[in-house]
Picture 1 (cartoon, rainbow, N blue to C red):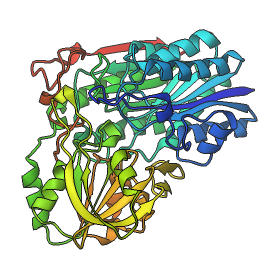
Picture 2: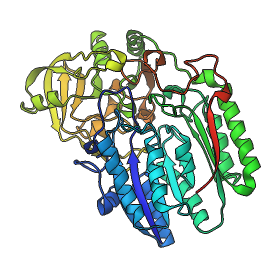
Picture 3: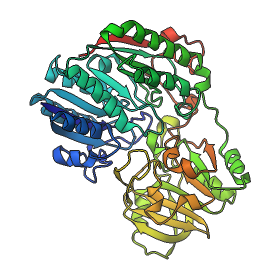
Picture 4: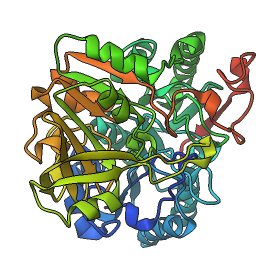
Length: 510
């Protein structure tokens, strides 16, 4: 028996001005783009990834694994056609050699040049190559967007139940169990899917709290009870201007349990739709948020600049929030990482201990939001020069290696330390600070660019969390975005939207 495994992850913010090229698909695989074959398997083995769960299941079943590609990129702009075609061609070449199952570890919100639903197009090509009878299992990120094509060509689908995403391996195991039941002829699955016409705010999506918590809890309990094979609630990725954005629910059920599965789908959709107003996050001026943080007596206080988050396609070079932190005189601060390769190159020509004045960030314009880059001039002392490499020890993607590229720690005054890196990275693990000898749990203020993922690594020691609505292509103010391709009407952009304005499909699994 032979399984083909592939990991392909990219969350595409279509408003980002930074295109995603093949060389960007290197996160967790080292420099130089994707990994293939044994190198890909080595990059994923023992990690908190769906691909690792697939490999473990194959070992249990005595199956051979061909690992086609491990291609994992930091969220950014649209994937170039060349990169997408290369990734698809690699997977199709592997499955065309013959296999008993295809097991895909995908994101679900990738947009490529010419393909607004890149994963749906990948599945279409895979299905054309393997035929109707080979099972195709798909693990997806909680922020996946769905088209009919993605549903039509899959045999089993499951998504992360957590945000921050700490159950990635478990999601692969859930997909694997459904595929194994299909291979062993213990299941005749059907996939039920519905997309509601609502753009949920990412700061209101997490299943750790309401309004999402008991919706996800109900889905997970139904799966544990055996009512269905898989039950997944997807918050969706709202910063992709495509017709498929929105909250979706996907159920995989045995054919003889279809009525119960349909009732569960209706129940979950009704509950989510009834709470649509609760999924909207109100913003406030940056100065007010920083003033509130300054008034808090004890730290660590985590300042979360969610408008410029690399984990949702932000450039991480917008300096407005740091500028306000300095203006209001906060002390004992660690901040970053701010992505500025040119600044890093300049500082690496200096030595530790040198006093320098540099213009940090603000190198990238964002025409979609009419934002012009505005560097921040900083004077400080170079405290650290590092290679930016670290291994994740926290609960999200545990064991994977990441790299900020060359990284500089610049000390401003006596107690403000600013991390400047060659590559963007959302801070969901403290390793991006501790690799440079700085423990964020021991400072008063930690300024990072994130939304929810920071809670995985920083939540355990945070005394306070202040959400700061800084500018950028990850803003929670959807009124700033020039949406053109969404399926309309959609809430909250269109207040008169009804639940029937969405989409859905019942599909016999293939």
